[in-house]
Each structure stands twice: as structure tokens, then as C-alpha cells.
Length: 298
Image 1 (cartoon, helix red, strand yellow):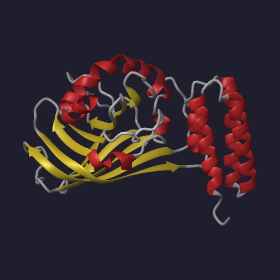
Image 2 (cartoon, helix red, strand yellow):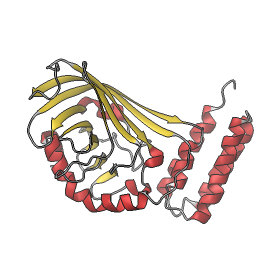
Image 3 (cartoon, helix red, strand yellow):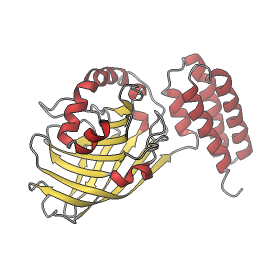
Image 4 (cartoon, helix red, strand yellow):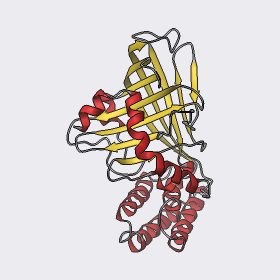
């Protein structure tokens, strides 16, 4: 069963398992990504965690022993994710392979040392692996974040897993909106390991938080429309309405901004729902959240 494999697999096995499945799609994704123009608005996701070391094999992190505390964070810039990073019905609800694209950073502090791993995930002879992988299986939900510096044999692996049905760690194909960290915290682990040897430092994650940082209220919606498979003709009116809403927010004209968002919702229902109901659901829910949040001072 999938859950048995997920529970028993080591980071090395995880990498070997996903490498072949994602190799072709990763390479295609890179070709697509470098030719895309993304919106300029900041759209950063931060996942911060604290973990307690349970296993130490080898001297990979000087001064770290069982009971040591390791803190860290994963930072993902959504504006640098390829639009086809999501959705593989046979395996993953979400995956993203960095491939040198800036925007994915894995940091952790082991007490005496602070590590920052890049998003290239490239090391000679170790193949191509996804940097972010959401596995929506029959008997478990799993969300993985992995990173290593180019040319290094050492890497970090942060995993949240939900083995308790009904599985609610992953509610859909959209990162980060569909990721529910609390439901995966009981089985969350952090691992720092040598990918060619069994040496590893393993820690149980004791706390974690996810924060979405937006430069404008509609930044995530703008990203979703831009990164969607909608035609340019259908994107333009949606983007224009969102940009008008952000301009109104910037001018302190909240009601005008909300009216633009309601207009946006009507356009989504008319132009998106039939062709991409999942995208429409996220656009409608995201815009409604902004409306219901109100404006400061209301």
C-alpha cells in the first residue's frame, strides 16, 4: 500500500522513486518556464517550522545530537513557478521542479550553523527530482519540500504526511491554497542527509506555519489568471478588472474595489466556470475572501 511505502521510505528512496516519473515533465516544464512572462507583483509563500532531532547517523551537522532543535523555512515565489507545475492525476496533486529558476529557497538553522539551499536541485549523477511534490494517494496525502545546492551530496527534505482518513492535508491541485499543514503535522519530519550514503539527521516537526505574502490584495488572483490555461482573449478582461480593483484599493476606494471584484466574479462565472471549473472555484473563493475581509478602518 502507498502509506506503507511512504512511512518506510528514506529520503534516498523517495528521490529514486520520483526521479523517473518526473524527469520528462520536469524538462518540458523548464522549456516552457523560461519563455514565460510573469506578473511583477510579489507573491511569496513562507512555510516556517521547528523540529526536534530524533535520529543522528553520521556527523553531517556538527554539534547536533538527539534532542537538538532545528528551525527552518521554505520560501516559494509563485511568480517563478511554471504554470504546468500542477496536476498529475496518476500521482501528484502538485509538483514543482526548480531547475535553477530563482524563487525556491530552503533555509534551516542547526544551532551553530545556518544553511541556505538553492532551488537548482542539481548534482552530477543524482538525476532530476521535484523540489515540491504533493502526493494525493488512495491511502495518504503527502507534501514534500526538498532542496540541495548544485554539486552537493547533502540536502534537506521536509515532509508533511496525513495517514488518517478522510485525508485533508491536500484538498486540491493548487499550492498553497489547498495545503492544510495542521492536518499533516502529526507525521511531519525534517531530514538532512547524504543522498549517496545512509548518513542522516532526522527530526520530528513540532510546529509549522504557512503565510502568503502579497504585494497587492489581488496579487494571487492575478497570478492564477496569468498562469492558467485560459486563452489570452479570456485573460485580458479578467486581468483588467483585477488591476482596477488593486488601483482602487491603493487609492483607498474600498467600495469601488469591491465592485470590481464582484464584476470579476461575474466574468469568472460567465467565462471560466464551464471550461475550467476548478480554476473558477479558486478565483471565486479568493475574490470572496478579499471582499469579506473588508478594508482597514471599516
